[in-house]
Length: 141
Image (cartoon, rainbow, N blue to C red):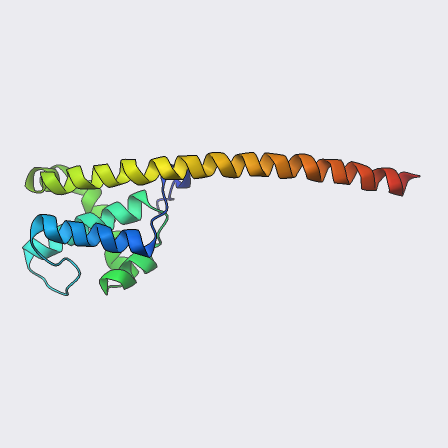
């Protein structure tokens, strides 16, 4: 079983997920959230699900619920995307271009967020260390 690399993933809120799906629907002139087995709907939906599963911190269960499916379908989409990447890339170049833009946009926000979190943690660690030294002095006296 593959493990997810969380350091290269970004967070996507429900608001941003709705916008992404709306943009994809407009780009391809179809609704990828409806239950359908038509190839014109299934393939873009699999691409988006695979992208979300591989590039974001969203779980397969959450993505599946959003699209009205089970988590196994999302994992299958992610595996299928990696196996048939060139097929999908040739067939839907504008979709991949849009998803690349989304990844760049949100991953830069995530990098900034991680930078600020690490600075906060460093500050807290220094304060905690100072407090522990004070407590240690009191206890050893």
